[in-house]
Length: 500
View 1: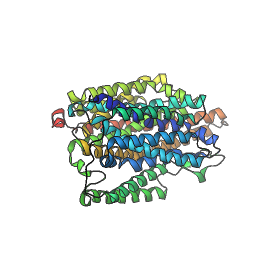
View 2 (view 1 turned 60 degrees about the horizontal axis):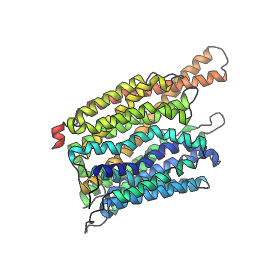
View 3 (view 1 turned 120 degrees about the vertical axis):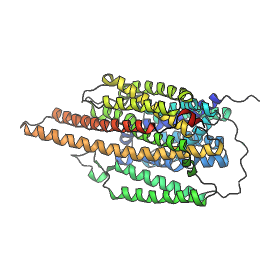
View 4 (view 1 turned 135 degrees about the vertical axis):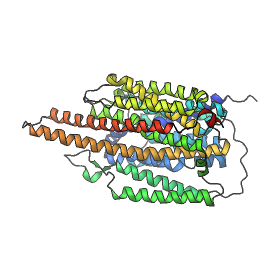
């Protein structure tokens, strides 16, 4: 029987991940149209995103373990089936409560796919070739935030909101058929006498979900603050007591999980002993820091175009303005994967972080009238920077891992990425709001001091100027974080050490 090409396996796994990666950005574009269509408030409809995220977090930590127990291909197909079926059902939901429940079930399927897809794509490649596999699997993850708003804008502008869920159906069916035909059959499952690590599963799920829900509350609107003068309401912020209670409970649960994994369980859900490996630890550190910095690229720049710039751009126009970032991301994925075997992770990630810093520095000069054309080259550099940092670091982390260890490692990587990105996103959003508020107060004071009654246009300009100032402050902070990331990249091992 002819052996399946390793490139065909990697591309099939990447295709399975693409609708999942695309889904979150498309749905974010559709939250307001959905809330209007279902006659519900925005705070309630946010649970379409929050519920999906929490379901992802709950499953991503144990999917590799389940792959080892029941077969990686079997669990990947199950995840694809769940994601595709519940995507279609989301489009048929008659009310917001049904939609939120279906999104949670959809999130369970999506959460299973990322670790298993990474393991399936990387596994067939030799250690020296794994940069190419990481590049292939990185395409959907890096490009989805750029092109998701474009597709979402086209669908919502021309069809009903249900179309953003129905679009997953044909892609999911094709990916399922290809995965069934192309992915190698699971090896004979090990007849382990060890008990299922139920304690580790419960502790990891509850701990991760508690922390992510806690930090998500930081940037969630407090419904009690919504009023006619303030229709958007005010976020809970870091001063909300429940944020710290949830994060504290989550931290205690994860400490207990760590003790169970290292001291008690003979077959832990996630193998924390992997952190003893220098390559894995340093690669994961760079991936985590890169996830925080890349949030500024993938989320905040579209927010500037859609909510701050005058006039505001539609989701479609904002997506089109980000095309240079997508082109830079594609180039970076090719370079990061192709050069890894020749240069190793250190020089590629170091240069990528420097490109990141340059891109953020140049985009920290936004004004209310800045267009995508004004900063297209810097957006290109930001896309190039994020991919040339993350791809080689992720390749280094899983470089020499095989079989069951690879499955558990990819679960660990994705779980920690989710935690770090959630905390980092909440911190950055809080900084943006604080800086924007500070600029608004100063501009408002200057306007009142002039003695003229502000017109509606004056107020709109004030809001745009304050938002631009807040963005510039945040991008300046991200510039320094990117410079710090350059220094951390110097601690990555060289090519020879990484190979050993």
